[in-house]
Amino acid sequence: MKDRFYLVSLRDTVGSNTAFHSHHGRGYSTDQRNARVYTREEAQRAWNTGREFDLPVDADAVDRHLVFHVDHQFVPGKTILSESATKYVGFVNGQWDGNDLFWLADAGKGQTIYARGNGLEVGQQYAVYREGDPYTMLNAKGKKYDAGLELNQVATGVAVASENDITTIELTDSFNAEVRRGDRVLPVYDPMLPTLFYPTMAEDVAAGGQIVRVMGSIGTAAKNSVVTIDRGNLEGVQVGHVFSINQKGEQVRDPKTKEMVQLPGQKIGNLMVFKTFDHFSYAYVLDSSLPIKIGAYIQPPLMDD
Image 1 (tube, rainbow, N blue to C red):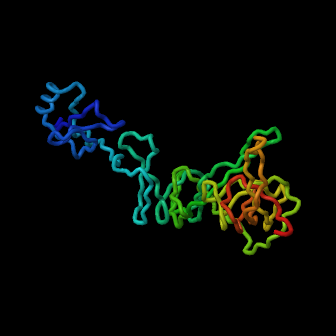
Image 2 (cartoon, helix red, strand yellow):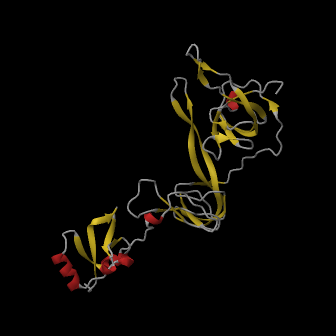
């Protein structure tokens, strides 16, 4: 054993991180670079005369097992994005282990990722998708079930090497998001959207449709937004169908009778369907006079609209 020791405080740990006695008696630090180095004699004396929670440890053993973290106290409490930044750290507000933050994955164009699974061929192009929240519907008994899962493409890449079931993929493009662990690697999907859309009157479509999701937003759409409606091929929806968007009226109390009264709904915009599935469709908001919220209902436009 070499003649190098640190003195750690078992009382003043920060989460699971050890706190060292600092140079020149300057308190404690979780940064080993600030730790005072004791000789064997000094460490023994500190143990004999110090407090029961101050423990000498082999400095060389500590140095071999160092793990570098980002000091939580220097991280701002709000999100800051910079064009020059290539890496970010984050933490769950109110849930952090001392100074231990996690690095946000930042794999993007020009970087390398590794995918596990069979069927990927070297030289072929693949897309990286991220799972969204499932779409839910009610069955005949009023019970919810998952009716579909949305995958959002975040990158494309080329498989350059493969060994056993691990494939190395070099990313060639990324789309406003970083690649994360758990994302799916699948063949590139061609949506085969038509280059021209011809708006048509939506007829014979099952009534009661509404907007159930807004792409790229927590829940508010406007002109040029893309939304999902809960009507699809099986309900009679076709590409090019145009619907008016209506906002439900508020419930107010009648000042005389004290009864709750439902006010009439209000038309706030129009949308056109450009992609259909069995029970859902993607639509483009053509115009809007007010913010469009999830739950706004749709109906075929009136002849005078």
